[in-house]
Length: 175
Image (cartoon, rainbow, N blue to C red):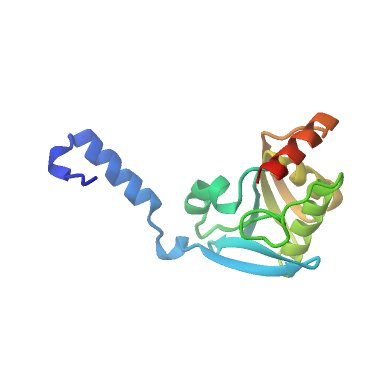
């Protein structure tokens, strides 16, 4: 489909221009994709910004660094922040290995996140966690309180029940 700008009404043209402006990366908002070997696994992460305040982004069970945090990667990175958005083992570009769901998978993800930030030489950082990333964030902050400046979580849960584990195993089998 070809869209001819002159045929669009002015509000649609304005909206398209705003979307294009917000999605285009500027030099200070360049997003780079990297991998770091931690705990025996190559962990993929994306990094943007050159600020003194590192912020770790942890995605939910069905997402990865880019799908869950596209807006934060483009919008938060400035001279104040360095944004690190990781794909936990078995997610996105942190494969192989494929995702597994042992009872301690959230603890494993928290250990990987802590090891990644240590390997990247960020001794203190803030964390933003969504869904399972929120759960992982709470474990990470609880196990490493001296490393965490601030914690922002949403969509998490306070425990993982047997029904949750059935859901995770069902997701694994469907992919």
